[in-house]
Image (cartoon, rainbow, N blue to C red; front, side):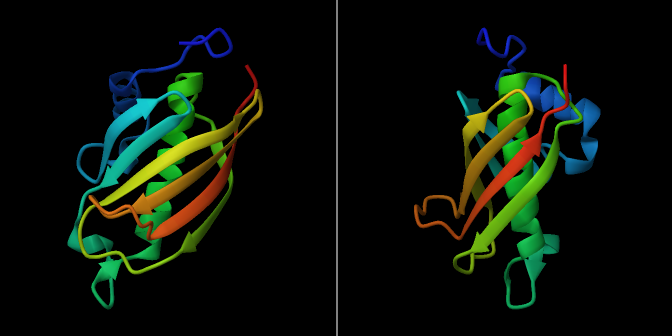
Length: 144
């Protein structure tokens, strides 16, 4: 908890908030919140046949969703339970074909202001440092 954001949340508090307020993302069944820290978050996309595209690789929409939800989680962990923080921009670069399996997403917030948050995410296969995708995104934080 910081003086700037007195309502910051722990990993368990973020997970409880998402299960209650945003069950569509299926925390624990599709996305697993692995960690939150100062200005950061790590999530895992659990492998599921529905995440595949032709050719046997994880689909772009699945990777995009993972990047977006990880950025949202990193922001929530800092600002507290603000359900109406929304994506205003997300740009993703697909760097290589991920194997059919889980994906890890690491997010670092680059800027956290009163109205906007900007973050960077890297997606990679577990145990592999080389990213399969890189994204940057901006979220709008509602006033007060």
